[in-house]
Length: 635
Image 1: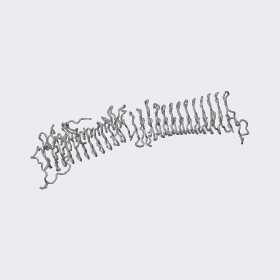
Image 2: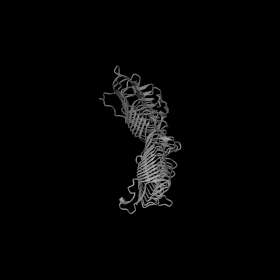
Image 3: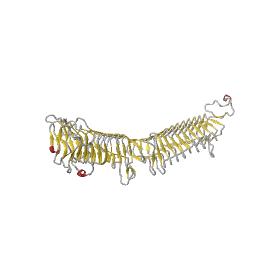
Image 4: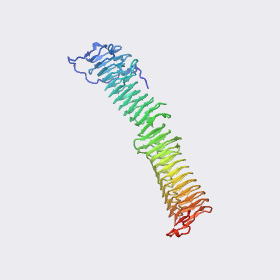
């Protein structure tokens, strides 16, 4: 937090030109029956020592030392009960502000009750100074004061203006001997052309306040609430500790929209908008100091902040791991260097030569919220993870038309990719690292593979269509479950030790399934692939699959091709194949398969059940060997 000094450091503001900011026109002469006490020029300096109601009889000037009007504690009561109606007039100093010079001053104390309203205070070191509890100020304009209004806790300030002051409003800590009786309340106030707008060192609630063209901080607060406030300046809101900023608007701030210097702040549903790119700009939307902790960001709309032409809507140092960051993205590109949840506010485009979202932290969740990330011509990746990261989650939306990949996350361990559409990207739809979970995704018309995972991945309930490379490619010890892959170069390619279960693999220009060693291919439907329907190498099991119409291309092998040794081929059904089953290796076992009118090739050195020719047979009971427990049938 920046501590505002109590001296008038901005003396030159006193001599700035412009109209005075009185709140109303001067009132008509007070009726003779008015029991209030008038204050006129000849009474200054005035000390009020008793409770009562007072009013200004005209414009007053005080150029002497100290205060023009001093309100002392009522003897023995500690309760002033003093009301001053400025009556639409101005209390002013015609000389430059001097240290210790005030328009109206109360030395404070416990239980004060002072009300000042309806007029203008101009040109003092402190326009009004009252540090006692319970000050009420309403409809007062403060013009060209070093500090417009200087007060303590428990003040109520409504509909005041602060124009060309060093600091418009300063709410300071309780003074010695005071006990806390509640925070200050500031409602409907405006600061304009001040060096600093509103400064609160103690609990203060600001509602419906505005600060425009502020040279420094519009709001500089500790333990306070800003609700439905707005402003523009060097910094919109500078936060110390334990503040709530909610539903506020900060527009065109030159340094920071919101700057967080402390801990335990909550920054919720604000609109923070910069001025766009510019050669002299270095504006940041929401910025955290290093090592601040336990802050919460959620639902903020932050846009158009740039360092020259480099976006920097969020400026949060890496390593801030105890903050709860829920970021709403309204424009790209954006680099994420902290664990957080990111949500898209709408469909967003990725500029040329940029990646949309660059992830540079562990435990990042990106929720596209049903929206799309779309690449403009020459864009890079939709989501890129250039370094080794863990626990990335990307879900619920579309990434399309990227110059490189939809998601490039080969460096991510234990990532989750859920309910995504990855369409027409220049390389991969999704390139995931080890331990990935990919569920409910559709990858189509990508130049390389649709979906690719590394070791230990799970691809479930996904679809790959018309990708120029492999539809689904899973690494060692991975699973592809309940997937559909059609119209690609290869339907599914696996590493060693994989499972492909309950998948539909159709109309691919090469194999339906191309499996490595030690795999399980079971309960799949494999149709109309140009080369082999299912191809396995060593030590795999091919169980209960249905193959149909595979092997139409020149040089094809068949519905099921076994190129290596130690495989089990059992319970499969094939029909209308070039060759239903081709076993080129040895020490394989082939049992209980059913093939329609298609030749079988079996190399020597394999074990198999008898092949029963059931072509044209109506009743198998009369066919020799038909009741053999390991019989294979062709019909």
